[in-house]
Structures are given as C-alpha cells and as structure tokens.
Amino acid sequence: MNMTAFAPEESMHSARPDHEVIIVGAGISGIGTAVQLKADGIDDILILERSIDVGGTWRDNRYPGIAVDITSFTYSFSFEQNPNWSRIFAPGSELYQYTRRVASKYGIYPHIRFGVEVQQARFDKHNDLWVLTLKQGKTLRARHLVSAGGGLISPKLPDIEGLDNFEGDIIHTARWPKGIDLKGKRVAVIGTGATAVQLVPEIARQVRQLDVYQRTPIWVLKKPDRTLPGWLKTLFRASPALQQGIRSVTDASSETLMVLSAIYYRQAPWIVRACEKAALQNMYEQLPDRQDLWEKLSPAYGFGCKRPTFSNEYFKTFAQDNVELVTTPIRHITRRGITTNDGKSRPIDVLVLATGYKTFEKGNIPSFELIGSNGTDLGQFWHDNRYQAYEGLTIPGYPNFYIMLGPYALIGTSYFKMVEGNAIHLSRCIRESHRRAATRVEVRQEAHDSYFQDIQKRQQGTVFLNHNCATSNSYYFDRHGDAPMLRPSTSLEMLWRAKHLPMTHYQFSGGGDRQGMIQPATDSAKSVWN
Image 1 (cartoon, one colour):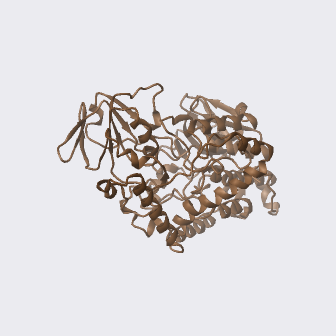
Image 2 (cartoon, one colour):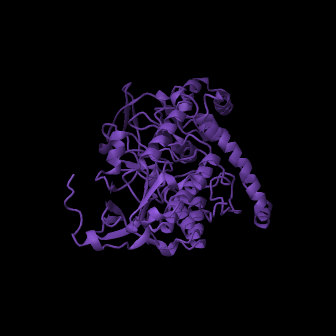
Image 3 (cartoon, one colour):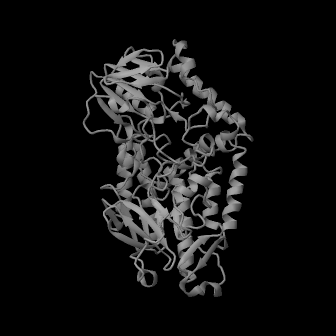
C-alpha cells in the first residue's frame, strides 16, 4: 500500500475540519444519527448521500409487493410513531415517505448534500481528522466520521453461465424499472428469499407463465396483516400512548420470534420447533392438495438460520396453472431462456433476479476504502481477520470512526433499534471528547477484544451453530463461517449498554493531551429515543 501519496505537507500541521461530523448515507441510519446528534447539541453535521433523496433501501426498492416484514409499529423510530400506516405491515412506499417526513420534521435536509459519493476516507493522524476523497474529485475533512450505509444496498448477481448472453429484459429486484409491463409475458424468477415471497404472488397475476427457480426453500409464517381502519388512526393521533402500547406488544412478539428463537436456541429450542411447525402448517393450509410440492418447499435447515418471512399467498401461488416451481439446478442461461441440469429448456421474455444483496463482504460494508491510523483498509482487515467491532460500532486503529451496521450490530426485531442504540453510543463518545477537550476517540484494544470474545461465546448457543445451518445459503454467514449480521442479545440489553457502557473503554487524546487532567464522569444523554 502506497502511504506516500497522502496529503500535502502543510496539511499535516494546519488542517482543520470542514465539519465536526460527516455522515455517509441518508437512509434510516444517517437520519437517525443526525437526529440524535442534534438533540445532544451537536449541529455541525454534514450528510453525504449519493442518490437524490433520503430513504436508502426503501427509496431504491420498488418491486411489486414490497412491504415491511415486521409490523410497522415496531419498524419505525420509537420517538416518531406514525399514526397513519395503511396496514399493520406497511407497503414499502410508505416507509420511504416516512423517512422523508422524519428528515423534514427534524431539520435534517439542510445538512444533506445529495449526489455525492465517497471514494476513500483516510485518517490524518497528525491532525486527528478524516480526509474524505469524493468521486467528484473534491476532498472534505471531518473530526468524526460515521458510515451509515445500509446492508441491503449492493445487489448481488448470481454466478450463472450465460447470464450476459440473455437477450430479453434482466431485472434485479433492487433496481425495479418504473413502468415495466409484465402482462402476458413469460417470466423467470431466480431466488426464493424474502423478496421473492413478496414478489411472486404479485406478478403471477399478470404474467402468462412464471417459472420460479429455487435453490433453498424459505420458512414462511402466516402474516397477521390487515388494513388499519380510519377510526383506529384517529385514536392513534389523539392518544400516542395507545400506539406506543401496541408497539410494546409487537416488540415483545417480534423479540420472541426473531431474537430469542435464534439467539437463545440452546436455552429454548422449543420456540424454534414451534415456529417450524407453524410454518409447515401455513404451507399445508395453502396447498392442501399438493403433497408433490410439500417436500420441495420444506426447508432442510433450521428456522432462524436465514431470515424467515411472512405470507398468506406465497405457497398457494404454486398451485396456479401458469406457475411452475423449478428445483433442478440451472445449467446455463441461453439467449432466450434457461436450461436446467436435466436438459430441459424453458423459454422466457423477462429474467428477474431475486438474488439478494452483498452484505458482509469486502467493498460493501463499508462501501468505500477506509484507511485508519494503522495504515490498513478496514474492509481488507475484516476480510483477512474476521468481522469484529466493539458493540458493533467502533474498531481499534480507526479513531473517530463509527459504523452503524457493523459486525454483530443488527438486532433481529428491527433495523431502527440498532440505529437507536448506535446513535446514542456514538453521540456519547463525541460529547465526551468535547468534555475532555480531546480530538481523538479510539476504543481500547482490550475492551474490543473482551467484547469480541464474549460475542463468540454467546454465538455458541445460537441457532447458527446448532441447527443444521450449513445448507441454508444464508447472508447471515460470512467467508469466515461466522454469522456477523445479528447481535446475540436482546434489544433491551443493547439499548441499556449503549446508554451506560463506561467511557473508560475509550482512549481520549489530542488537543494538547489535556484530557489526562480530567476524571471520567457519567454523562447523561438527551436521548430522543426515550
């Protein structure tokens, strides 16, 4: 790695930050972080967003049938409940509009610079600054840097021979084209994850023929969804406490289903068994006369090894005359169709790739090159040495840096909960650096290592290491065989730790080293999440 082409010599001694905090990404993470910082009196914030609006995943994903797969009462900011959801499981367009309303209400838009993409960030250890190089060729300097890119932003293409040769339309669900008409066409969908579960029933109503290519079945539970009546929305507006009470109930049920079942598998395997039984029953009820499909649609791996989902229509779609479930592996894609290993070729007009996203892979988290004070790119370090971060947020060797979706950061109930905890945590770090007149904040190696050891110990009791996950083809797992996507804890523990973890786990330096004369004190966050 060439370390000589860093910065002009004068910047080593005189550079000052353009902003106290730069946040990369204006999705849920970026908005939530900015709201928390502003509530805590930190207003010198710049958000860099490569697109033209806020919303992240919910802005980009517009495929037919897109909706949340956790109730909207839980899947939202706790400080900004929305009384106007149209359904218990809101459509994706409503989540997009929700992020726009939050950004507007809390004054986030003036802090955002749209159409800007970060190419590299490098830590200037002489000035305790992050120097960001933008793809547009300009540079910016920040005292603190927050990576707020989501995990589901980089579409993953299948490694199938002949994909580039197909002459029809190829659509990845993450880049669904506006106005495309599938009526009367022969369509193939590759992939049967959570996205396909929402998509398949919707497009099956339009197309002449739909072939669904399945590599790995998915656990699908009944979806307790319904339209929310107008009188209930009126009650929510009149009494926010009522909606908060319903949120508490949906939080508890989601916590049991999505967290306790996976994280505490050894202690409570009956929860997983009950979920598996319920999912199979859902399939039997939707396909009562199609035993020929039961085995094909029944997962061979344990519930929780990959993200389960909800649907009351997915299974019954395969009983339609114009829908075929194909489980024979694909041999190659031709100019006009798909050929499977049994030699059968199926002609198609449109190829839909419901093949998910890159998650914990080099080049995706973070989405730009990040060179720390140790001279090492973070993505390369994780690629070589396992994904790890203290509380899923900070890493030794990368001072003044916070990654919102770090290893073992995500709480299974809701992405918003992770944002809440990490925003509180990083705000405490920045405010403590102000109190100490320090210019550098870095997690202590021993605190980081102790935390990582505890995470690995907890992982031993999870479903990931105990319930036949090898065949799940789950994005929860990385190249090291670890499952760094989900944090092995409840959301209550995560939020408590974010608010109370000792600041002595961090080193504060710079600013004339004045911090050494100040004794640590317990801070009190003005949290918007309370």
